Length: 156
Image 1 (cartoon, rainbow, N blue to C red):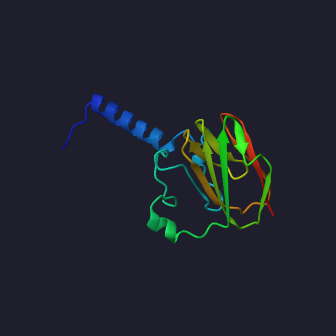
Image 2: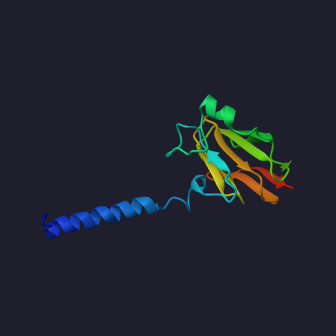
Image 3: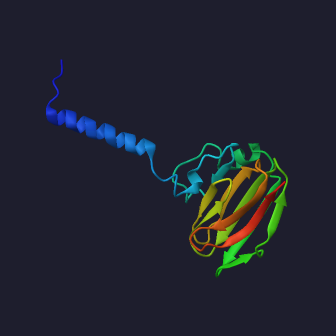
């Protein structure tokens, strides 16, 4: 038989409360890279920039060989607040697997509006967002810190 002291109950209650706070988390509102999209798209920053592994994103060659082929690959570079290629519209078909890779000379965060996906952009290191374009419409792809519109994604 064990006897709990009031101090022991307080410590156990504090530990339980801390565990509950850690499980709930609060970063989803501010960090779109942790959002859960509706059709199982994935988003990932380079392995060195991620805070937690995701089961669907991997940098290992064997995992890359087993993933479906990307239908549309979009690569953007930002240098001295200039977007290359210049901002414009990119059209993809509904259902296509889209991969967006962005490299910036300044640390920032990539965000795909409408899909609520994002990736951290450490200076000089590519950030990656990959998803199935399952929603039709016009969606801005931008950076958060520098507020640059990289392009408008049209899904038809």
